[in-house]
Image 1 (tube, rainbow, N blue to C red):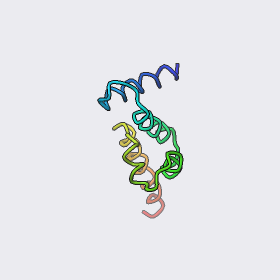
Image 2: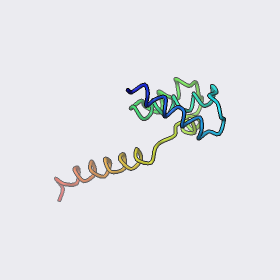
Image 3: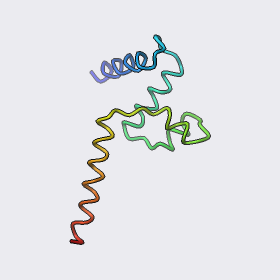
Image 4: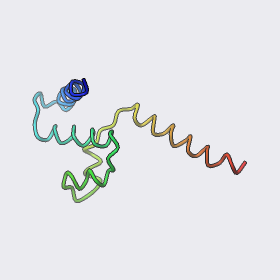
Amino acid sequence: MRTYFAFVELRYAVELHGAGRLTPHVLRHFCASQLYLNGMDLVAIQETLGHAWVATTMRYVHLHREHVEQAWLAGQARAAGRLEGLV
């Protein structure tokens, strides 16, 4: 079942990129995004893709809005937990 969802997301990435077909460039974007969403560090993805600058890798990683929102909420919860003992 997980393979099916990866295929659907890959098809969506192809359509989003506007290429109309799967190219190595689209595949690199898709793989970078999937690695990041599954917890791989950005610097590790940079080394995997062979980029000299992390800024280049950041252009390859596309995030879903929900992922950004969840990360922000988790950071707020961590900050609130640290302040809890101070107040």
